[in-house]
Amino acid sequence: MDQNLKTIFDFIQQNENLTADEKDTFSKAVKDVDKELAITTFKLDRTEKVKRTTAILLEETIEELEQKRKAIEETNVALTKSMEELKAAQAQLIQSEKMASLGELTAGIAHEIQNPLNFVNNFSELNSELMDEMREELAIGNNQLANEIADDIKQNLEKINHHGKRAADIVKGMLQHSRTSSGVKEPTDINALADEYLRLAYHGLRAKDKSFNADFQTEFDPTLPKINVIPQDIGRVLLNLINNAFYAVGAPPPSRSEFGTGSEGGIKERGTDYKPTVIVRTSSWNPPSGGRGALISVIDNGPGIPAHIVDKIFQPFFTTKPTGQGTGLGLSLSYDIVKAHGGEFKVETIEGEGSEFIIQLINE
Image (tube, rainbow, N blue to C red; front, side, top):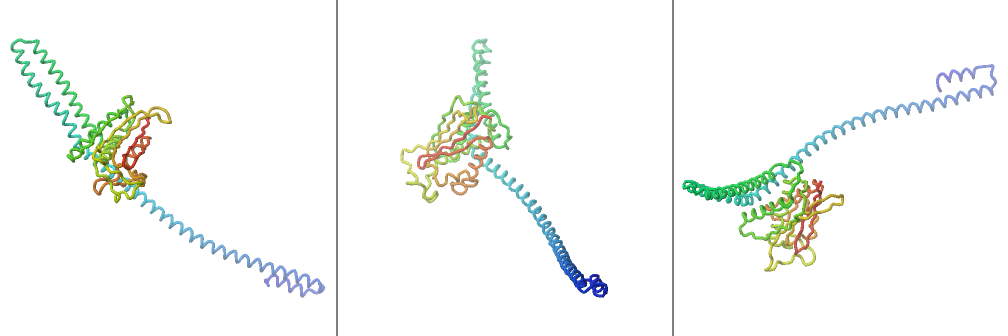
């Protein structure tokens, strides 16, 4: 019993002024209070122990959380570094793909530049001869004939100027293709851009492989308005699609071992009358959002794409070409470029008949 309560209890028992019943009543009350006090003391003691235990657990939890916070910070730093390295690697891969496509263009560019240079050289030599003739006519006083020769020289100089600009435009296009994109859209003649890359791709392939032979056709919409695009980026897309189309019509048809079983009947065999053909087509397009846009199609009559890999062709690093002949990045980068222009990029293909890659551009 509590010491104070015991003193009160003894006092009650020794008090002669209280009756026995009163002593029993008061004693019972004291005992009840002592019992309640003991229970309260027990509860307080248990609460204190719980408090101490909770404080210890809380301290350990705070320490553990601090360790986890530091670990998360270290992980974030590592992830940030990895992301920067990944972006750098991606940029390097993109630039490598651009330079690879530039290498494919080199032979075609050389062929295209040679034509205007031949004109420049020929007209320059002709003008040199005409100058001698004009001096002779002037020496004998035949001014009328000298003037006619001067007119011919002037016309030849205009032709030299025209073909010189043509060569300069080809070089400019080459530099635009190789440099990092400025990211600035500008009104672009899609027909001229497509025609340029079609001829460059064809002559480039012919220069690498003299046995390569394929027909190419253009079906351009003459009413197509200029479209606001980044020309060097769309040029890269066209170059990739055209090169792929020429590869499709020039390479041997894929076997089942390369593409699997395919769909019904597999790949149709090419007959002796098969004429490999690539068509580049443009047309006006009215987007649902309004205004006018452009459709660009690159069509080939190659073996087509098997149904079970169509959904994979835009994935990075996916390629059906033999090792060393493709990075698998061309279509993936092309898809990203078209999407960045707010356009759509899709493919329609039939095994044994050919493929059509379609670009939808909005004139923003």
